[in-house]
Each structure stands twice: as C-alpha cells, then as structure tokens.
Image: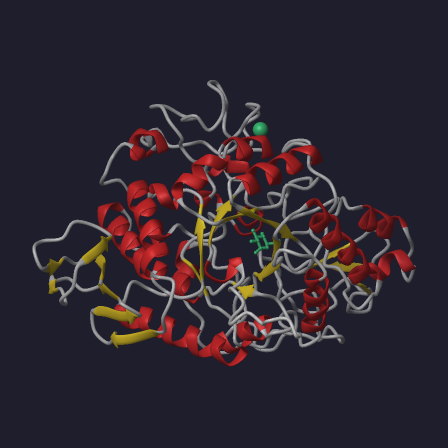
Amino acid sequence: MPAPTPASTPAPWWRDAVFYQVYVRSFADSDGDGLGDLPGITSRLRYLRDLGVDAVWITPFYPSPQHDAGYDVADYRDVDPRFGRLSDVDDLLTRAHRLGLRVVVDLVPNHTSSDHPWFRAALAARPGAAERARYLFRQGRGRRGDRPPNNWESVFGGPAWSRVEDGEWYLHLFDTSQPDLDWRNPEVPAMFDDVLRFWLDRGVDGFRVDVAHGLFKVASLRDQRGVTHGGDLPSDREDRAMVERTVRDEPMWDQPEVHEVYRSWRRLLEQYDGDRMAVAEAWTQTPESMARYVRRDELHQAFNFAWLLAPWSAEAFAEVVRGTLAAVAPVGAAPTWVLSNHDVVRHPTRYGGGPRGLARARAATLTMLALPGSAYLYQGEELGLEEVDVPPESRQDPYWFRTGKPGRDGARVPIPWRGSRPPYGFGPAGTTPWLPMPDDWAALTVGRQRKDPDSTWTFYRDALRARRRWATCGEVEIVEGRRTVLHLRRGDLTVVCNCGSRPVRLPAGEIVQASGPLHGDLLPPDTAVWLV
Ligand code: GLC
Ligand code: MG
C-alpha cells in the first residue's frame, strides 16, 4: 500500500518568523572588557524568548582585527577571543534551541580581512603568483601604473583600489582592510562550502549572507559609467534621505554569475535536516532584482530594504507593500520586512525623533508586523532607542575615517539593561562600553520598561503575541493607501496606520492592538491599530 501523503506540509519555520538581530559588540558584555560577547548573549536568551521572537541573527564573532566591527574576517572557522570560544557557540546554540529559538550566523563571502592567511600569502607572493589569484590584483593605469585600474569607488568613500609595494593594486569595495575575493577562482567557492558545513555541523539554523549582491564583478573590471557621487551605503543622514530611483551602471554588483553560488548553497543546505536557511543582504536596485536571489532554487530570503528607505508616508508605504508582494509572487518566495539594522539610522530618528518619531516608529512597526513573511528587528528598537550622536573622538566606523561623515556608530551604541547610569547593566559595574552610552537613558532600560504597561518594550511584546494570533494567514489587500491613511486587510485583520496630521475615524471592529493611545473611535496621527 502506498504511504498516505499528508494533505499539506507545514511551512518551514523561517517563512513567517520574527528575527531579532543581535549586534554582538553591543548586546551584553559578560567579562567587562567593554565589548559584548557570546556568553553575554547566552545569558540573555531568556529575555529574547520573553519578548517573543522566533530567531536570533548574530553579527560576526569570528577572529578579526575589527577594522569594520568584525565584517573583516581573518578566520571563518573560529571565534575571536574577545567574543569567546567555539565552546561558547555550542553553549549558545544548545541553550537557544532548548528555549525554542533558532540561531542564524553571519557569513561574509565578498571579502576577507587583510589579516586572513590568504591575503598575507598574497602580499608575500609576487605579481602573477597563484596566491594573488584568490583576490583581484591588477596593474595600474598610466605609464607608470600609478593610477588605479578602474574608476570604482569604495562604499566607504575614496578609491576602491590600494597599491602594494611591488606596484600592483588590489580591489576593496569596502575598507582597505577588506580585500575582495575573486569568486572566479575555484578555491574560493570550495573554501566557503567548507565554512558553511563547519557551522551547519555545529548546529546553526542558517546564515545571513553579507553583501550577497557582491562576490562577482564584471570580468573585464571595466569602468563604471556615469559615476556622479561616492559610495552607495545609505550612511549619513542627508544621503540616507535620498532614494535613488534611476538604475545605475554597477559593474561591481549584482552580476548574473552570483546566482550559481546560491544555487549550490541551496543544495548544500538541503543536505541538512531542520529547514536550514539563508537570507541575503543584497542592496540591489529594484524589487525585481532582489527577487532573483530568492528563486526556488536559490536563497530562502532576501532583506527587503524598501520600507527602510521610504519616508513616513501612507502612499510610500502602500507602494512598498504593493511592490514587494508583486516582486516576490512570481518566484513563490515569502517577503521580508525590516525597519532598522546596524547600518542605518534608527527608525524613530529617521521619522523625526522625539515623541513623534517614536510614535511613528511604533506605528510603522505594528503595520509591518501584520504583513505576510518574516520580520527582522534590530536590538534596541524594542526599547525605542534613537540614533545617538556619538562624539567624533569616540567614533569607530571606517566610513567615518574615510569620508569624515558621522557613519553608523550612532545605531551601534550598547543597549541599556538596568540601573540609572552607564553602562546600565550592559557589562559589570565599572565597564567602559566600546562606544559611550548616553547619560539620559535611565528611563529606557529593559528593567524600567518591562514594568511599564505603556512602554515601547511592552508594546513590542504585545504586538508579537498578537501577531501569532492574528497575523499569520491570508493575502494582503490594500484598501486605501493614496493619501494620509494606509488601510490594509489581511484575512480577518484590518490594519490602519494614520500618517496624516488629523485624527481619522476607525473602521468597525474590535481593537486587538494599537501602537499608541486612541481617542474613542478616533485614530490619532502617527498611530496604527489592528482590528478584527
Ligand atoms: C554589510 C554589513 C556592514 C559591513 C559591510 C561590509 O553591508 O552589514 O556592516 O560594513 O557589509 O562587510
Ligand atoms: Mg566582553
């Protein structure tokens, strides 16, 4: 007799999971050296379970000179002693899994650190040697070869090429300490296959793929056409407000060959049990190009940065929802949503800061949490933290050093756990955090907010609970999204977000969650609500 086939296979865990991004350096410091660490994370996993997230994404903790906060990896298969040891990863995984939390780690395949043994060997070798062929070394232009091989600029500002002593240049799309690998060299994909297996064998549930749209560059390394401005990381406040609408010539990004890598990683992930997954950080230029990373035989998810780049506007939000759903539908992928991460200005600040910025941030979050697919939260947003104005002498972002613009440190300040003074329980008393923590964060600590029914923390916990109950099925219908109000329907749920300046009448229904206080049957400005 043939075995009975189940009516439908349950959706994999990641499809509608809420992920919480832990920025290792700034989450919890167990040993008082001022840097967060793996034992610190393990000691706070219960906190994440109580908050109600499903999975944790941990930023790089591998051995690294830390020129780009760990996104410059010197050894892909070990732990930086500042963050712990391999056995701390094992403890973290065991404890997380026992609490029902999944764990995703960061994978940085576009570049290594200049301290990686491969790059050291490349520097020690001569031009043309096999050791150089794992990176992109080239002769310069001009009679003396003293001009860079092409006109590309680093995302962190300045030329994307640096010259070594014997006169050759190497490509680094980020900092000089982050040489780009040559993915056309078969040694490179072979090494990363081993790295994936190494962490999968230890039990991680998946990977966040850094700069997933990088890896391959146009083979000729030709000039970029129509270069008008420096790097494209939306890093300082003015630049981040500008959303590029036109498609630029980008011979260094989003090349067709990259998709073959993700097809092979998909096959590799599928050799493991437990629905292991990967999410691409791909700053591609259109929703359609983003969707190519999540075709059925490629990666499982890609960050959808559209909302994070959108202004506070019902019309813009409606367009983001419509555009995203339309882009992923043809490839059958689940969408993802994100409002903040360690590379952008925190969303309460983007929305104007102060009480109004926070009200808007909560409203946008509640609206996002109603949508199908998965949501990514960034540590500290559940506390309503704002971007911090880090004093110039304390800044550490390579972007700041290369451009003189503030950079990303303001979103990376350690989070306050308890007490009335820095380090607010981030580390043992007397700890000097790697970035200074503001003096006025006493009211924002986890300890204070957990006791307050109106706090942002309580709002996040309640919204995540409500999401499990009300926002897990049904297609999205945009009822209104042209003027100042975004009105969505999903299954039994109605979502209204008031982006205007006047209160609006609520539609009929029972309120199951609101982002802020309501006035009778009126929805105040900068507020969102869920009704059934
Ligand atoms: C990604 C990371 C960012 C890092 C860059 C280079 O964009 O999110 O923090 O600086 O890649 O690895
Ligand atoms: Mg520490």
